[in-house]
Image (cartoon, rainbow, N blue to C red; front, top):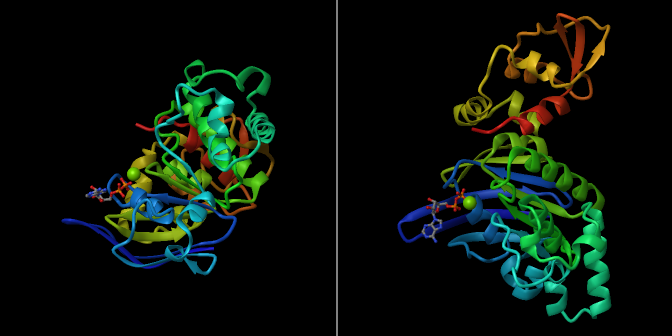
Length: 310
Ligand code: ADP
Ligand code: MG
């Protein structure tokens, strides 16, 4: 478990984080979302002590992080950067194993680990292990950036806007990938994004930040259905560009399944109206010209994730 207790960070003139209190359960997929400058990166970097708080304490498994040996702490916290930052003059397997090498793992073990991780993210090791980073696409490079952070089996993985430079299709694929890795690996993921769609799709718990303050912590459902204040509501609504034909577009794109149940929503509902009736595990039944269809929260979030973000 990670706990922030009354944590503040002041840069010379700027209060970046103001009295932050936050609990991240062990094994969670936790997302920090907020506009640029809201303090997300500062919060993340305080966790691996790239930035030290001005006030307050952060606890990792009930021990203050300042009481850990810095090197030991960092080894438990893998870090995925926004810009992919692979070493251009090292092969892919050397990039993945670079931390293992600095820890003195034998070469054979390092290569085995790199190859196993490549396989886990659907990059054929026979093809990719000895390539150079410049021979990979942006999305492939970012896969390597992610598995590099996992190579020495950290307990926590910190990710700072890892997909923001990618096109929508690659972003969706990598979102699916981190969701799968999270299920397979039983590590705690702390993921930063400014994209509310991405947050809603990925987060088991989501903290919405603004100007160094938490506005709301909750599940996707909590935030969609019960936004805590006008900021959260506005952030969610302006980002989803409500259009009356949204439901029809969802259905046209193959989300949802046909059903004979009585419709609870007209086909012209907005995404917000749909979100309001969605209660997992029951789906909302929407009337369309060709009959009625069931839509679930997952359909909605998939749709939001693949939609182009302006
Ligand atoms: P985010 O990641 O949400 O965009 P940051 O944590 O990077 O936000 O920044 C939070 C606030 O702190 C912003 O107002 C930013 O300008 C400021 N800030 C960040 N780093 C520094 C720094 N090294 N010196 C001074 N101000 C900083
Ligand atoms: Mg940032």
